[in-house]
Image (cartoon, rainbow, N blue to C red; front, top):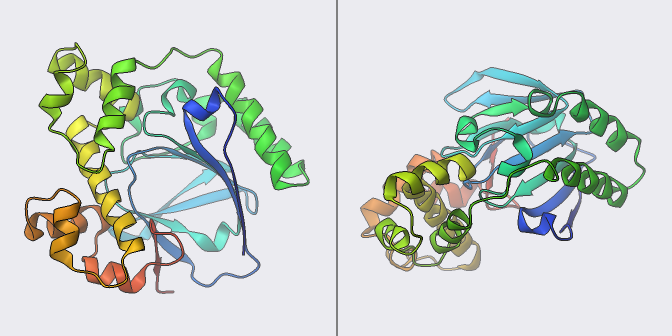
Length: 272
């Protein structure tokens, strides 16, 4: 397996967490469960012309997208076809970071996958053709950088209140939404509307997803796990509340997740 990442330069660094490239010579498992992050991903298949995603509640049902896929933001797990994605390039946007590039309110993408052609038109196909011709991951990252910069020049600026709220809701101890709204000078209704437009979720739901992500990061660092301590350290009222949220977002109990997780904490291998 080969994996490389690249953090783009400003101004893209304000919107993008990283670019990534993955390539593997063999398929260990054909499907993976991908856990929600509250952010949008752009995925480009360099191996096949189609990207398949599966109904997480009925693995016999799937959708196919041509070449380039925009995913999320999700509040539940998704299932991807890893057998057809042995060479893949992607953009991990920061929460709210995709809004300037997609030309529509991000809430319209909640729990959805959309072909990039739908959003960018012929520019999406041209980008994928250029990426297929590029010789190295580094060259592909540069092409991605130029394509996103071209989209950014025509986009409205994000609202500073949303950026502030995202930072607050990603803190180790997430403050009450009312405390956040008190500091931004917008009415609760206006704030929620603007937050959904840029991030795609309500502030409350986004905060729950971020707390779930804190749990996953915590589990990466712990060798001997005390579930009560995990729940308390991540801001849950009690263990029952923690388990409820974990199962709602992952479809798994915490102990089953630990047994089945693979190299990345947001990915869980599914049996072939």
